[in-house]
Image 1 (cartoon, helix red, strand yellow):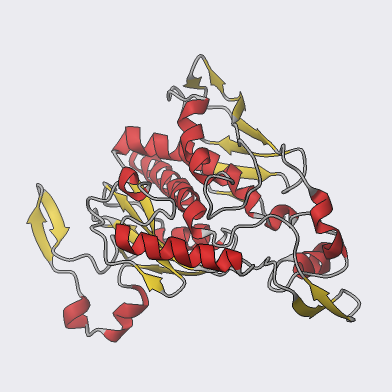
Image 2 (cartoon, rainbow, N blue to C red; image 1 turned 180 degrees about the vertical axis):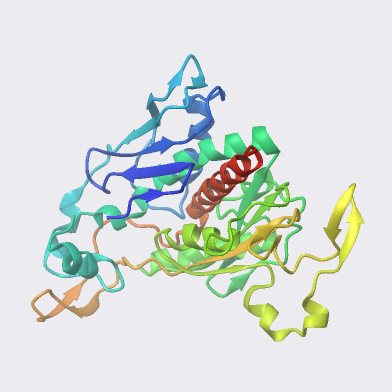
Length: 362
């Protein structure tokens, strides 16, 4: 199983949804960086379950413990081991799913690949695995912020058929994003999104949505053409997140409907360097950062596990009706905000170290 991500800044995640705990090993973090559990916990608190009426009611504190790699509040340059216990485990909720694979979930494919699976909560395919991504991403983000001034902010830009107005990506802050429980910075639209999610939950159904993310203050030059282009790394990271079904950067698919004369980003001199007048490229050209904000969007499907009875088939091919009894989010996008930010940080930290290695060569 591919549970390691990154080249120089590497992260290996471990744990299943209802085992004793989940965590990560972070290898390649530079030494002498100040780091405490509090630096990580803030992002985990934004991801944890039970934080509002829009999320699963599973009760987990998701309290992080640093097991190694840090001494006297400083990173040692050695592997950093991170651990979070699972305390509110209820594997019995998934008894009916031992023999009936959930529609559009990973039960069937994991069984076919490995001949065995963790039927309680989806095991490694559960979104609980993303705790490790968020924790490791918080470390990567601290490195990026202190070494380069990089800022990463994600927000909910769509839920179901409800789209928020365009947000000023140059100025949006996490405080603005967190002003409401759906994490959409446009208040009026947020209220509509909240009601839609509540309605879906009451109907024992689910909704999908879109997250937008901006990464600011990247210097020009990050990205490794031709196969490890910056946008390719971001796409890899985002599409590895559970429930993701789409990724676009800059103008994305809408750009295909423009002519080149409108889509091109003319160069101008600004802030003491060459920059672009517009940013339809999304801050990346030729797979390399150009110094403009990196802007991308990630699409999340409706949650596969729902309470409505569904006509399906068991593993033997017999007709079956499945109504899931586990605790699940009616819409994942509010809690996915720190996950997207964390995965973006992991990509950028890795690219930063690869570029630093190149610049230090004779």
